[in-house]
Length: 176
Image 1: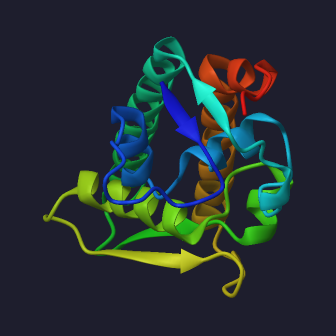
Image 2: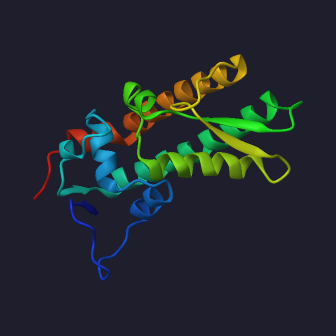
């Protein structure tokens, strides 16, 4: 069982596989509860702390992380194909407003790790830069289409993760 609380675990507490995997993408278990409950991604007060997760739910979290990894690989492939004839691959970083509008976690850690994994999957043979959709208006049609694809794909991923494990977590009453 994984116990979700609003305090950071002390060093002697064991770390579960799902907790470690969530950390690789910049999320903590309580973030998953907040996302699954449909709460505003920027409102940490909506998470229900003190919930214990079954091994089945932990397995679903692990499967969700695998979906995230697949998403990053697919996005990398799309970027390489879109920029096949360009000297530089530009990746769109969604703005916080875009994230909130589509109920995507807007955690800086989560977004930077997602973008980092996409860049890692693109590989060392390409020069990559990130376009900040918040500060740099997307006037280029290719970049605008990519940002739309990124958001749409991530929105689908978020809902798939919620479907696979989040709704079950959100429906289980907390055990204190």
